[in-house]
Image (cartoon, rainbow, N blue to C red):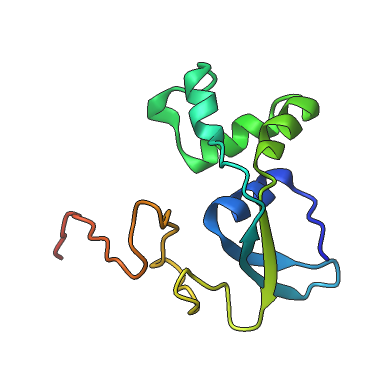
Length: 131
């Protein structure tokens, strides 16, 4: 078993479904989703938006993280603990994605299999620049 010292990072691990944890001795282990306890997922960002805590235009990872880090610990814990629904397993070649293969840093994205098929492709339209 592993305990983490940052509730927000644990929440992010739940959202992403896999990640890496640095142990006190410096060792880094990879963990991936193993099972859910069946409770429904509750979006912290939706709660913050619906209650006027963060504006829609400011709904970014770093802004949510900063907001949660700057509120009372009891409020932060109650928001983050609404998603104690996932169990993780240690993996050797991870973190693992939904297809049970290692994710690619900067390329793999977390998706909800209820809305996005496993192995589906996402295209991003960006602007090309030339020298």
